[in-house]
Length: 101
Image 1 (spheres, rainbow, N blue to C red):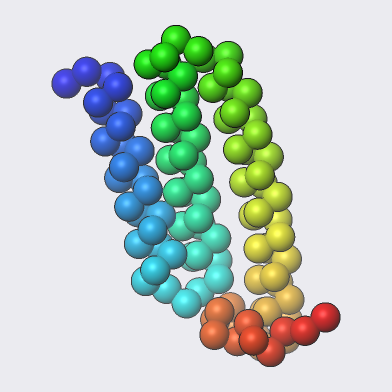
Image 2: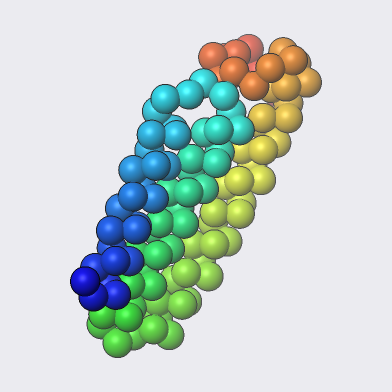
């Protein structure tokens, strides 16, 4: 098997693992981790596309942008998780409706 095929399969497995983590739980931290795993797979796919097209510099610029968006998303979701825990004592996302402010 060639290297791009292995990277493609690994990326697909990471996307599936992230989606399963998003769908199967109501715990906020597990959802954040599932989202992060899926976003890392997107990063892998962007690098693979740059490698296959011979435009690694462009792919690296896109990856830096994806990493910045990923970090901002993780920080915002972590803040929501902290306020959810402070108010309810658990990180169950079914309690999100009661957060205001």
